[in-house]
Amino acid sequence: MIDHIGLPVSDFARSRAFYATALAPLGYTVLMEVSAEETGSHAHAGFGRDGIPDFWISSGGPLVGRLHVAFAAPDRATVDAFHAAALAAGGVDNGAPGLRPHYHPNYWGAFVLDPDGHNIEAVCHRPA
Image (cartoon, rainbow, N blue to C red):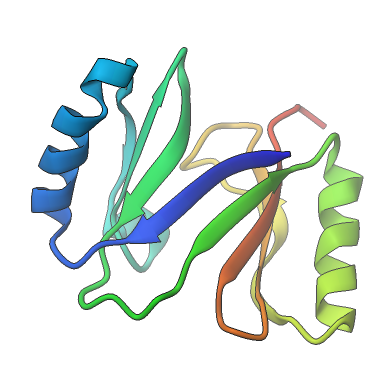
């Protein structure tokens, strides 16, 4: 199951305003924002409803076609197994399994780049 998806945008403020307006009729609002200082790279805004941000945009300048897809995992061991399997299959590490408390206290995720450079993640939201 897809947990969330994210896309890079060329003008973060403009795209944030666009999606805030365009997604409002669907019940989506900005539920979370993460600064470039917190992530060490780009700013992110998470849109969603019912308290769950499942559509994200991220800053990063000109679009280069890199997509972000996160798959829901039932537990942290599965996230770890995903990361190991993806690396064994030729993926490139883009973030080892671990807590990402700037998202929330139980966010356990791992990231790899696929052969085309897309950022693929597995995430578990449950406590250890």
